[in-house]
Length: 385
Image 1 (cartoon, one colour):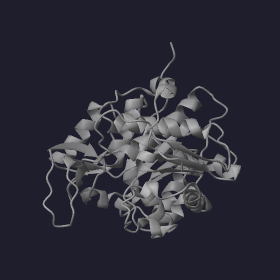
Image 2 (image 1 turned 120 degrees about the horizontal axis):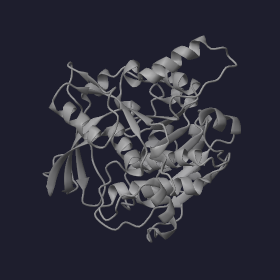
Image 3 (image 1 turned 180 degrees about the vertical axis):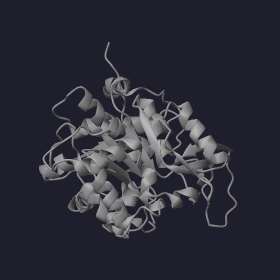
């Protein structure tokens, strides 16, 4: 019987922004900022980067540990309890009396899209020390006393960090130095940019030289890079943003992030699919994605999305896409694969996201998902990029 990755892999660390979400299900789309908007029902669920990504890993059978700071309140305790019910390690989640747990109100529109209103709460009090655990601290301390030519086994293979725009005290050079320390241990850093709406270079740009896997959706990618900003303007045709960009434009945006040192750029395009690009310099790939199978340098792929079966709730889609992509890298490491094509990597990310957001899809472990990829139909309405 084939083993699943959960049996042998070390846990993934998911650090960064947390939230308790109030979801407004099947909401109308407001016509103006002052419109009265109706929705079918509401539910309270944990959310934010650490929860959405960690849950994505758990569904695929990958063990996870979470690092964040919540308020010492009912929402904070509920957040931790929900993580623990999924088997997620919360022993280093900190609680803060000075501010409340983050609360986000997310209207989930009838067309599958969503809005977001957020009170950041204790996310604004997170410091670098809150984003480390004892294993990382010990490894960093040993690193200081080791000879420059010595090497050691990293305590983790992946350090996933989410939503730096919302963790306001860990930005710019502070974030850059934190990432440099983590990468120096031979750990691959994955960065998710949900909520980024500006190309303010003081927030994340200096930290990107240490990033192995960088995920943005197309709107965030344009805002961060400043490339092709015309697509962010209102369009008289009402054509969705993801349908207005072409392959060369998305490649231009990916190249911008490669120039800043990112090894692998993943840009999701909503229902249309996802685009992956690798750095043209193989040394950058080896430096920022250590321990993992060789990825082809200077390669770009676009993969169309899979067909949906039920009601769509897009909350957490991007986080779960990243979890799927990283889980596939971990799986290839486990089976000692010497290579990995980007098409398969992208497909697993898309399939993982689909089973999170589509009510008509039954969750599968990573191995089950890989085995069924060839049987999953593509969305018939998706146009080539």
